[in-house]
Length: 268
Image 1 (cartoon, one colour):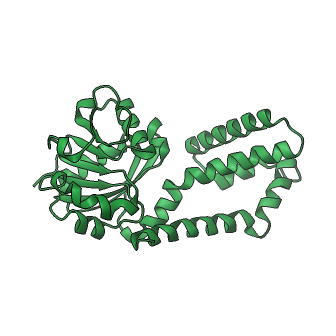
Image 2 (image 1 turned 90 degrees about the horizontal axis):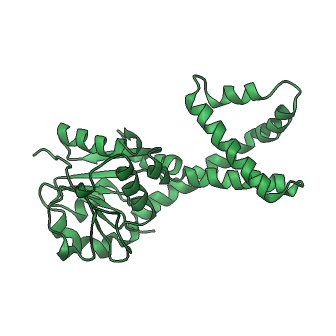
Image 3 (image 1 turned 180 degrees about the vertical axis):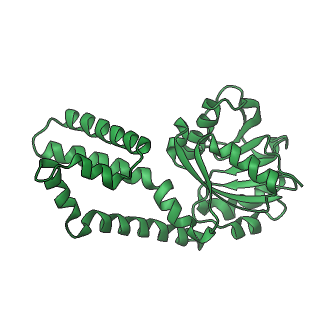
């Protein structure tokens, strides 16, 4: 059976689900093709149906997006069986929950898809990592098209790498925000007014990221172009590069994040 992915029901519309919903609407997706099941959400955007209980959902959807906490799967899963039957593709934002676990929780669904975007989905600038089981060619095309409008979708062939990719692309913005805050804080510690430091740090990172995205060379080369031999930037890079300090710190960061994903799949 082909999965058409014509109507998506978002189950649990928190920060991430809300960002994706906003991104789809900004991309021009018809709000009538989107609905939300969330007992706590104050209101849904205009044209998007909002339901408070599973029994209220009319069952016109052919895909669901699980947006609640992964620790809630055991509690909420049984009550969602009626919404995840034949002809429905189950898409999951639940960090650490594998395709096999999704299939066990929703055995009647036609297909299962792991999805990992980040909050930049709200402005259609998110990487979206996808892994699937059970989709036919039309289903893959439909799923890809729906998520690609949120930024750049990528199929991951090896699900074993999903936690690592999540650590990089899903959790990565949190690390970038921390870096922006630290860059501003360092300037403030050295005497710059905090407001000015925060504004300049944000503008610097925004411009650098935009240039890197548009450049035909990698960020390492761009860094060297900023740094003249014997100049100010080179002196600062020497601190970051000493003993590969920055890379080692980020390796530890990604490893800890990915390990947490693995632990979540085991209930940890």
